[in-house]
Image (cartoon, rainbow, N blue to C red; front, side, top):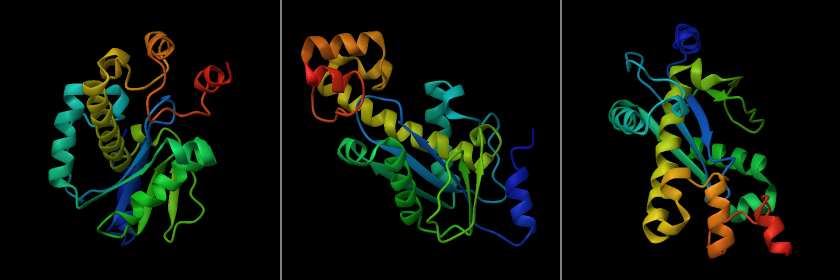
Length: 202
């Protein structure tokens, strides 16, 4: 598959600043949802770049550094657990995506988005199902968002090692839920997410 197919089509139509956008962190019980909006140069090449979930942690870190060094622009967006609990995770993800676009130092002329549809963008966009495996720009955004959020979980792990954030990154694994039951809730947990909401009710 040509990972540049969507970008090339837009570039050939005179659209120079094509951004890829993706999110990470819709499923975890703790922490923000993180989005990235990445504009790559037309001569960008990174062998092996694909959906960040398919890459090893070491590879993601390497790719993150390479993308940061070579991208024309990177915008990050985040919505914390308070916003997620207030508006729901889907709406919070959208808000984080709008924020990522606003934080891009170069204004995209067209945005390729992984699966989500954003109705309030100033510029045209294309929603691509499994976009992180079909577009080089979305794949790059996927890596930036994932490494950004994972690093936050590693920091949390330093302060609360008993929760095991280093291994599960906040996702609802059996060990994670057992740790919550044993040690209780710390700041950052999403109160509307099961099983957190059920624990609060008890």
